Image (tube, rainbow, N blue to C red):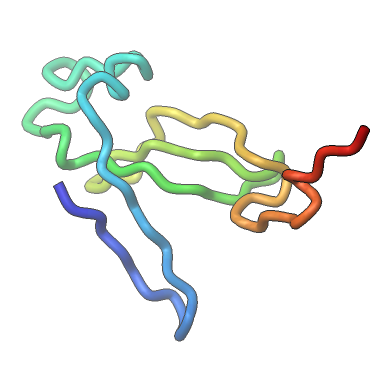
Length: 88
C-alpha cells in the first residue's frame, strides 16, 4: 500500500495514509455489509480541521463517507517547541 498525496498549493501537501483491516473493524465497519464491492484499499486516513478542532478521520474515498473521526492535537500539524519541554 502506498500513500496517496494531493498538492493543494505549491509547498502544501495533504497525505492520505492507507488503513488496515483492523482499523476498519475497530471503527465498526463491516465491508461486506456497509460498503459492498469495496476493499480496504478504498479507505484512507488523514487530518481534517472542523468546527470542533483537528481530527484524524478515516474516509471511504469513493463516497467520502466518514467512518471514524478521532480528536487530534490542538494545533493539528503544528508542533510547538515547548511541547517536549520538561519543567521541574
